[in-house]
Length: 128
Image 1 (cartoon, rainbow, N blue to C red):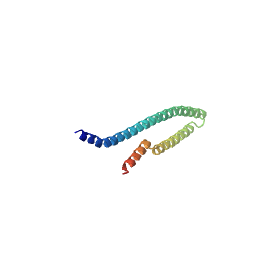
Image 2: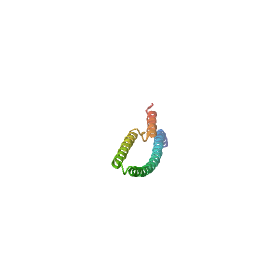
Image 3: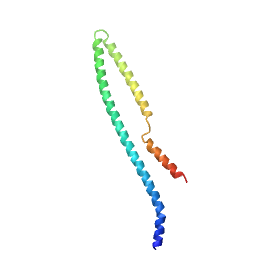
Image 4: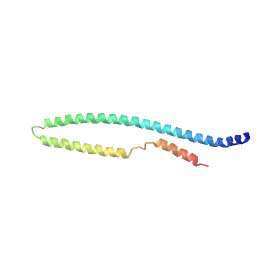
């Protein structure tokens, strides 16, 4: 009976090694996903903070510019000056919206490195 147990252990040993390797590969890939998620989160938070700060400062500058132009042209061309500033703001907003849209469409794939590693793993397992 000990001979049968030893032969069964020998039969299971390669299978266990293969399963152990597969789980080790999966663990490595999951760790890579976690690292990429953390990096993406940090990048997005930094961009979000800087974007909000830029928007706030730009809004304050635009308010001051609008007041300055309105005061400068108050006696002569007040409504034309305000209409001109409004047109400039609308055009700038449209340009920003178009750039933001193109930036979203040209963004890199989020888990590009992880997917590349999974593809390498799949190629390795396909080979006989």
